[in-house]
Length: 200
Picture 1 (cartoon, rainbow, N blue to C red):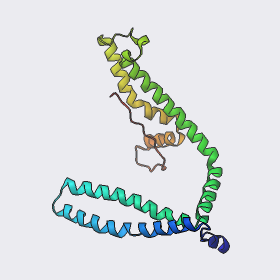
Picture 2: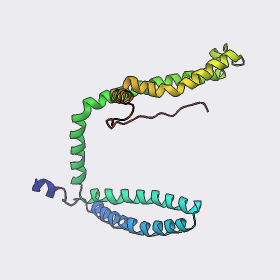
Picture 3: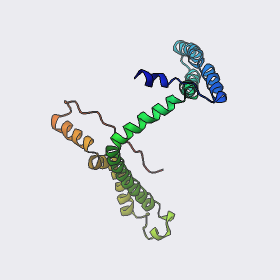
Picture 4: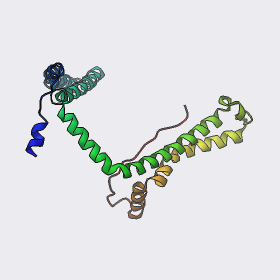
């Protein structure tokens, strides 16, 4: 274990890349303290006198700080290339262990959003028949057709939850548990996939 840990900190044989990594690391190491000072000052000023400009300035500085911290965290890889090798090995090992489950989840998500895209595209085309000449036989000036299309758009909002119930077993089980318990029992943590769609 000690040999494995020590091997992570073997310097890069390429002197140019090693020098670049050291320079990048030094340059990016000042991001956090410098941005903290300015963001703290702007935050205090905004607390005393709320101003949208101050909020936007801090938002921009936060995004810049995030970019700078990425440089700070990745520059050691140029200095110690074995870090990247070890990281890749860990990711590869975990990927192999979870590949079967991931493929099943990916297939479920693919089917879910394929149906959503097809349904939404169908409704858009039906609502705007001029987009496809062959759909011109649908008269959208008729009240009945407009009512049907409005109904389809309303149902469109239910498509994503319905697809999640069909293709995501963990969400389906938690929904049943919540309905049976009246929402009083804790449900297991799950990743909910959201999809926003609607007429433009």
